[in-house]
Length: 174
Image (cartoon, rainbow, N blue to C red; front, side, top):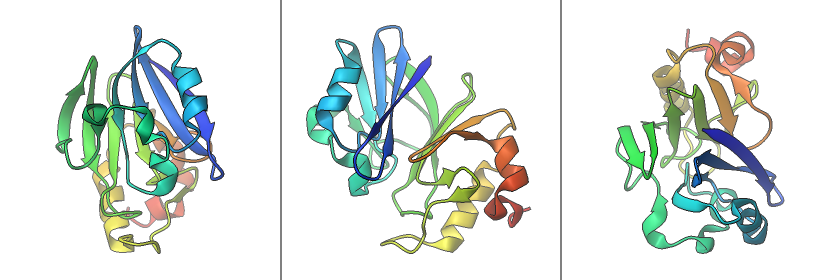
């Protein structure tokens, strides 16, 4: 699986295109539909996953058919399959109550939207955000392997090894 990032919108949201063969899984198409469409090119979109419903993660949803859109309402916690992609969904409220994260075990890739950032976590002071939920969610992912790469909704990638050492929020759950 190849992972491409298309940075979109005024908040520089990372829209991810996961490529498997000529098939794509799109994560968080936040804005700039034309830019995302150009990056997709002629590849087949198997599905679109929304990690949470904030405007900067859903702005280009109209680009896709409704039956290809997945979120917390139609993905169960645990193993899921969308097209040729198999992944684990982890419910990770804290930044927002509808937040989910995606873990691709074989590829050692974790997509958390605005859950975990480089040396930080998502804001909990917005509507349906909750710090206690954030800590509970961090506990849920605390046993993921060190070499798993975290692909955040904004900013640069990181790893669970780095976050366990440098992220104050992770240190508070030990």
